[in-house]
Length: 241
Image 1 (cartoon, rainbow, N blue to C red):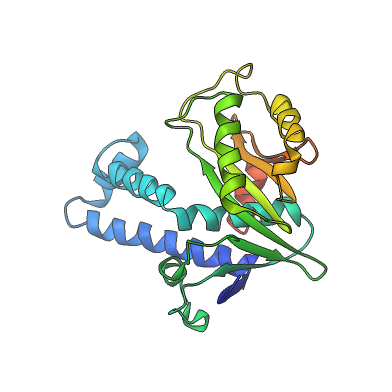
Image 2 (cartoon, helix red, strand yellow):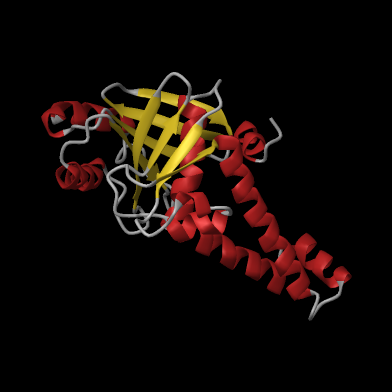
């Protein structure tokens, strides 16, 4: 990874948190140009109105931008792989960006280099792990093992030798899937049968399980499911623990 910007997990979390608070504050003052405080409070309580529409639109825009997804995923991966350690998280910046000039979350996002084989490095005092992060586009692909395997084999072919890197695939189902058609145990078996095509050290899936857990599901070279309670993950994300 070239031209790295590195920051502590806490520092990255704080940059993201400040950016989100600034958005809320700016939205509040913008809404005050049309509404009084009571009207704003009512819309927030009712969960409907132009204030809620603006929040939902921003949330959708935020989660569709690759840089935001990779930053949030890096924070989650830090929790899974380094649960008892503070870490440093590194991202590649474009060649014309001086990492020393990255002072805000917005600076970080604007400076991202997207065409990389390694999306982030996560380091503790004793070890360093490299990750390639991919979103499985389930909003338009069928929820079947066969379709997923075809997609991921294309990933293996595209990236070539990725020794020393973990492939982290984000599952974001637009609708519930049939577990008989999309089966993690069978996926793990299928990958073991094509292991000669896989140069990544690990292949893992991450997803939200019924709004109760954040899950890291390893499917290569071992089959193992790790759970973090969602309430704990949110507290840690907010810096409360």
